Amino acid sequence: MKIAVSTDERTHLVDTVIDELSKQGHEVTYFGPAHGDSADWPDVTLQAVTQVADGSADEAIVLCWTGTGCTIVANKVPGIRAALCQDAPTAQGARIWNHANVLGLSLRTTTEGLAKEILEAWFATPYSDDEWNRRQIQRIDELERHYRG
Image 1 (cartoon, rainbow, N blue to C red):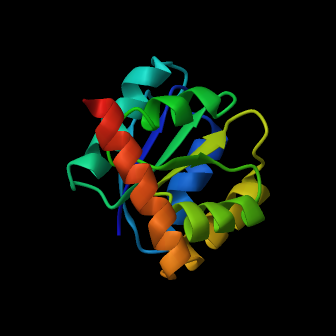
Image 2: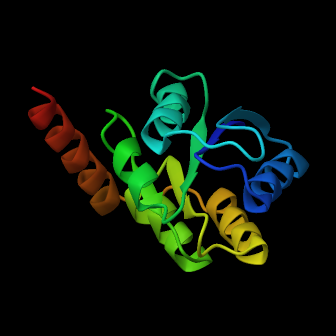
């Protein structure tokens, strides 16, 4: 799977996420600064999620200090369903019920061990395909089309 990863600050957690994705056999494209530098989180987030929206990447993982800003930016892009996940059960729920295609993580609160648990749950959990859930996702798509104009 092709995964776009973005962050405004290159930390050890970012390296752990990228390494873990590579170990799982994913092809990673990184958007963000080198170690010791910083970037604007709206810009790097947009670069990553645009890859998902245009089909260049299957999914994205976006990081910033709280994870909130990058998740908000991601959700502004049509076709993106980003979820800020603080634990593995939330990641599972985001996949099952929300068909999330972008994972938001906090640089501040996510430990390396927790990141591995979240990634494992994220990639091991398929989207739900039951009728009720498909209706919910259709409603999200309708809202997106309505507000996009």
